[in-house]
Image (cartoon, rainbow over all chains, first blue to last red):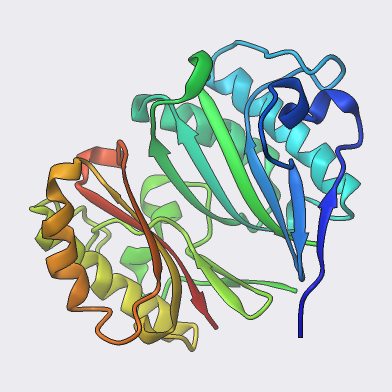
Length: 132
Length: 129
């Protein structure tokens, strides 16, 4: 038996970071019951341009964009299973956590946070797996 | 359907101890997704800093508790992301890792990253429920 694999188009062109930054990836792919969302960085959903801010403001923007992508795929924050957060420095993890706690409903998803060298001066990158 | 797997012992509730806004694990679609596992005392939640080897032993012990409480086990691991603080420890990781995934080891990716609280290793895993 083979499960369905389907690329889910972003609801607005600005959220298509794959196109904006010419990356060979899809933003959201459905595989079976799951949605796999590519690592998101802070962009303006209208223009697709990078938004540079603090760890907190970038997290806030990314999660708002993630919500739009999930909803376009028929999912939502309460169906998120697992989130991986990459921050530019683990000293900033509590700031990311604060925004994360404000935005995600109870009970929270499983999550892994680590510090990583991110491209293009990005402070946070968030990838996620959700139920479709 | 999404189901939260509660911490089987109080020390494994990182949200209660450290304010991490996350569930210990989530069961969904026949899989169990665990939050990043760090070496903490499963009873007290106290951080257990040590060598990569000693930290890995604590993590695998905690992972066994968590997975078994959810009806799974270390034998049912599907995918492992092993985050280590320095790639120089790659062989050290393998030595301890082998002891826990003796038969048909899971898919695995290893990379170096900054791990919270200066830990040397963190495991991020998915298991079959």
